[in-house]
Amino acid sequence: MQYLIERSKEAWAKFLPHISIDSVVFGFHEGEIKVLLLKMKDATKWQLPGGYLLKEEDLDAAAYRVLKERSGADKVFLHQFGVMGAPNRSQGFFEDHEDGLWNKQRFLTVGYYALVDNTEIKAVPDDISDFCEWKQLNELPEMAMDHGEIIDKALEALRLHLNYKPIGYNLLPSAFTMPELQKLYETILNKKLNRGNFYRKMTSFNILKKLDETRRGGAHKAPNLYEFDVDKYNAALKDGLQPLW
Image (cartoon, rainbow, N blue to C red; front, top):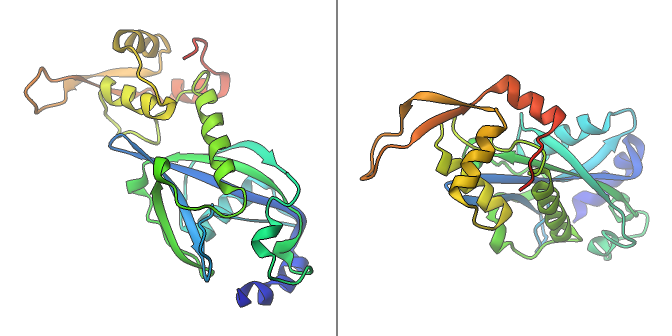
């Protein structure tokens, strides 16, 4: 990883020491959840798109910048979910380098997660990576450092947030059926939900608008189509939802 050595001096000058950012980008499409991963040049293990905080940069702004620079992903909603700071969580990945290497220092990493329709994101590797790809959540490759644990924590946070935040605006088409919305929740929660209870709960949130049209095609009765009421959806993001899953 000669390129890391060449960039180390520049990193010491421009970034805030001991703080990094890692983003877990969950993609959902056709009932499957994937995660956006990178493989750095000359590396054998995969990792999350991550980077460092400029000395005069806002933390959230850094998260968006890093994600775009590392993967090309832009205009996604990022949510901060935690800080990981176990001793030696990342140093071992760079054990073959001198101790003065920027990347080999101890870093506390701030974790963000994003929810996107992965077909809308064209993953592009940056100049220090060979690959930037979507990987199945239940079939992840060998992960570098503690990035597998970070993914687990991000998924745990996402499931917790389902209890009080609306999910789906960035993951479903503008018009969707109730079974499609239920499938999204079941995939994230990794459990089956009762159809009647799900319908009653979702309609009670008052964030959906029923459209005057149905989904055409198929042998069964065409299901009704819905869309999110954007104003009420955004209000629910701020104020939360009451019933729990």
